[in-house]
Length: 273
Image 1 (cartoon, rainbow, N blue to C red):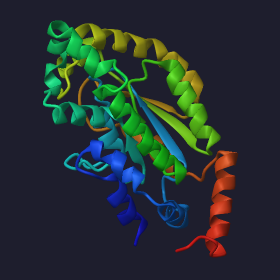
Image 2 (image 1 turned 180 degrees about the horizontal axis):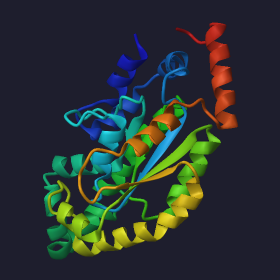
Image 3 (image 1 turned 60 degrees about the vertical axis):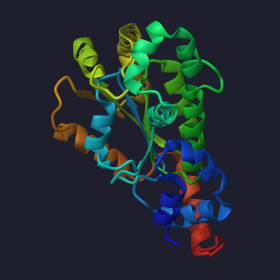
Image 4 (image 1 turned 180 degrees about the vertical axis):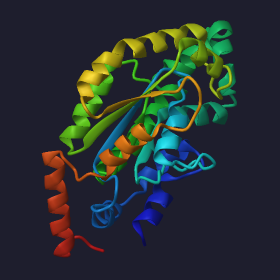
């Protein structure tokens, strides 16, 4: 069975909330075959962080840059990268529990107890979505598959920690910062499937803006800003830069060693095919 088929059966499911059971069923042989077939795949050991405030259009930008099919729920991009986004699981969880994501702003104002159950309790929908997405991410990391980490970027420390973790596994890292004005972000927020309260959106937007300079310093040359105030095709400069990052040989020394070992195992048939 091909790697693509194995991954499709294990990860691409109708609902993100099916992933927990799917991951429990994954056998060691799948990870072995990921190494055999995936070590020379494009996107291996490449990790791209998406950052930008709510309503900035990060998902739209990721689709445009990485070729993720807008009509499918698949997390696979044409670059070979896998999308990691807890918002997808959160929205699926809301709908599964009979809650319209567009009602979140109203719920926060009018039903504070329900809001806390959804967003703050350990077994609430929000935390459940994060847990499931983390399991998905761990699966990708086990095979050193390329990833697109989609988040707001309002917590600098969290991004810095995740970047350090990825690099400790051998990944090369990159950031695409999607920027837009607060006014446009508010307008788009009202059209989203999951509408955020104005105060929460504004605070998150300001936090992200304050982190812009820090992210530039953290990622150095592996950093690009996309002005998404108006939806338009991604600039050729940004597209070229991201293409170059993904297609270049892995720079991380830990990653280079992992690839060398995986190729040796494959060459000497030490992993079952």
